[in-house]
Length: 408
Image (tube, rainbow, N blue to C red; front, side, top):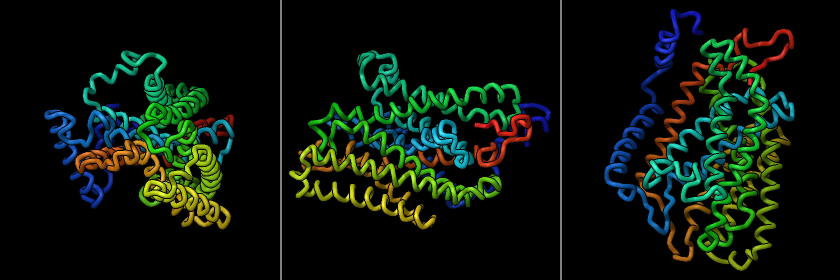
């Protein structure tokens, strides 16, 4: 349904705001309860202070909303820069059907995780400080990360904007934003590369507080490499779920290419995870990790590296060799858990490990984090059911002369 079939833009928007599909479902009920509970918790947080709901202190200033939603969540948005690089730079057209969905997820991830970041700041109105360099300096890592974050969100929005203009039947704006795609993709890839490694660089200043098995001067590089297979693993899971949930909105081309795309992503994940594992081993030997391995923290380190890097790497490889989608999905699920574990080990669990205490978030922090994810899913679903994300673009958005689709 496009805007030209209505009397104007406002009636079109009113029509699109109406729910599509069943309202009362198990997922919607759980999401509604979680979001309502999160609203109550946030009221308490902003009336009684941050310390009333989070397990944080001057010694542990970063709470769960930063460590999980931002430090961990941003890694899973890495699929966007990988997929756009393959399609627009490498010309790997078989991955084009998943470009829009991947960009949309990354855009929503950055938007909602930026919101989660504001929740965890004691004085959220001072978030402008790292952006303008006040009290931090223009050469600080936080200044660079803040600007990478903002500029990359803008890049993702421009990359996704052709979909919005097609939905609203805005032909001239559609032509303009489509012409920007390649330049914005190149700019976005550079920003995302710097941003993913920049998050790791923040921990370089916490060397005395992070366990030696997890600390390394190569954390920025490890963060960047791991964001590649983290993002692609999430793409595999999202595409698997989307294939079932969005059957009506998914084009035949998308459905028919699903298996081939998933197997291709499995191959990339296995290679990337092997490179990551190789670097982890080098860092382990360089930092004399054997001195710490025969300890509870050492055993936990082996669980992470063997159980959530080596094993899924091999499963990805077997899944690719045998063209087995079930193995690919299992490996993707394990990899996602592994990335969450790695990021929380660095930022939360092993932070100040010498105190022999493990830092756990409060139940209220977990509820709010879950609510952020639920809202993100709901917005993603709303957009997919209205805009040509999984479907083919409208006929007027196809350049017949060039005989190629000009969508992003």
